[in-house]
Image (cartoon, rainbow, N blue to C red; front, side):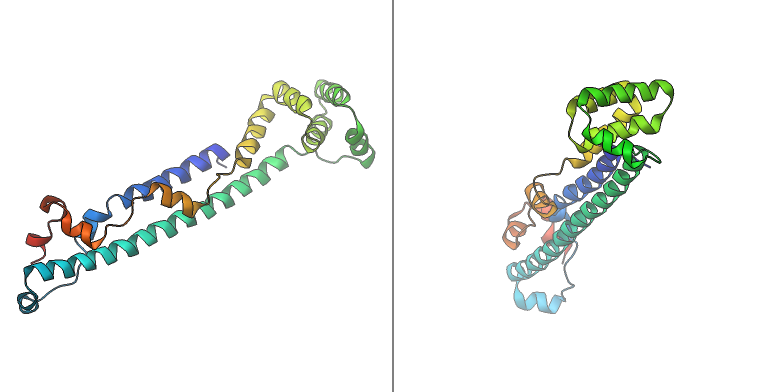
Length: 207
């Protein structure tokens, strides 16, 4: 299974693509207007016809930007679910097997120095379950000294523990607010009308 870092990077790339799409809405909106008959355009006149087209383009851009935001938020939900699955997998890998109640009780009451000693002895004798118990209890009790020792003597534990730390780092903003912070607003009717002809190409292309 992908690591926490890989999961976050993958979803971040997908979400970044959605943000980038928001910057293309102005150009894309030009191609999303309803057909207008020559008769109707003649009645409206060139300027009013362009205003109608610009309004249609702006409405499409609003709708498509909402689609981008919804997809962005959905990706965030999927990302959190994937992270939770990976965290569960890591916790299983860092959990001891069968441990009797007495050993767990003793570890829960042990000093940090005693836990480090027990961990080292267990690793030396090949009793990984006992070592994992000491590591698990240290994490539950927030014994930083013991945790630091564990991830030093066992690099693989350090890698897994690093993923747990990464998983616990939540962004301050919710996904919707994050999208609004970075995405470009949908172009208004006035902005479309005011755009250079090369940008909007509304007069020649839509008649």
